[in-house]
Image (tube, rainbow, N blue to C red; front, side, top):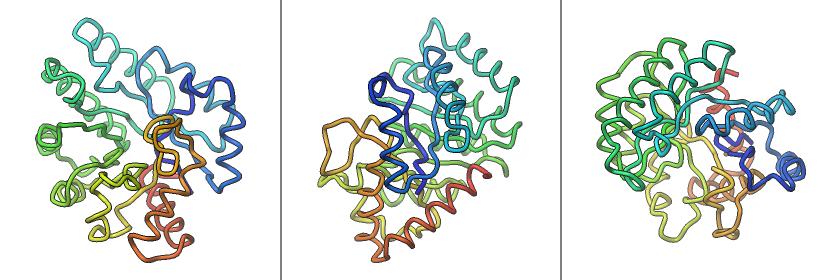
Length: 254
């Protein structure tokens, strides 16, 4: 199994990071993809990648919640500097978040568009964070439509129509703990989406699946997400693992 989105470098894991990683490995997780947030955590993320070079793969980008009026341009310069220094597996997580902050929409869009341009220039996938902002996100993606534009809608929580729209634009859906929630809703239509468009993720330490909802999430819990897909698709775990793993490896070109 592949966890396509985990913040294992987060301070929530400072006391037991190695043990947490080992639990995930013991549970069958082979690769961990690390989305960037902002300059305050880049070095910690890259240090973790260096400690597990065969398993950890860092992205680079500026999270939309960290697109601040006073610092966003400087933050993007830092992102650009890293992209010039070394290869990354993706640009992410990037996008638009109107749940936490609506007043910064204009600069969130500018930051999103700039980072999409960098991804296209470098032929890299993007990992999209979208919250209360599907319409705005799709507007940007349609404006920036390009044969090299591809990636993942991280923590997909939209409806069936939005799922089809994302797939039509060349994106896969990142399915995490929300699929196990009673009020998550995506479990009601996910079977209508071919597995070839699905990848697994935890977004740990956030959004732990049932039966750990409300607690710290970790990559070992990917088995509960995969187990829910077994129920939804009526396929065995080995098939779910094989297809979603192949999808992730293809997206990240590993």
